[in-house]
Length: 214
Image (cartoon, rainbow, N blue to C red):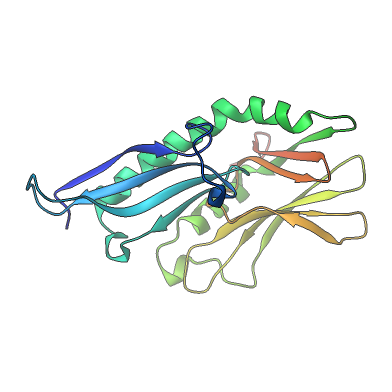
């Protein structure tokens, strides 16, 4: 489909401070996947997809060419772009945390949520499912909960579909069970999750329970 794929254009406030338009909104950084259908010098490349890192640490892919969703070159470039954005998130995490904590009365709660390795393996299977027999299904949501000292709690969820692979999100609730805020959809269950509500940062790190027999 494409003779050349490039993913060397990274942009956004994390890499271009002071040059970001207001419409970027929740975007922290992005990598553009460009493609050329011929080797001609006069051909102008087209944007195939944009891989986006949000300010919540979510990484999402926005396809401009739906016909390229199964192109192996494109998928490889997207995989590399996701790693680039993960590195940007990791490098800037402490800086962003310090920024959020500026100001009187700011608080950060941190929790480690251990999940059995067998469950994490099942979740990975749902997230990478490729056939109807492997899909999680809409009525089989997997939820693990972290509770904070102020009474709030964060649910880390793996949500199923009938016709597509599963997806994940985190939701913050108050002590009465009222939903306060939530992350964007992600493609991973393990690792860091963060939500901010009224100046307080709630952090959960999902890790495998090494004591769980595999």
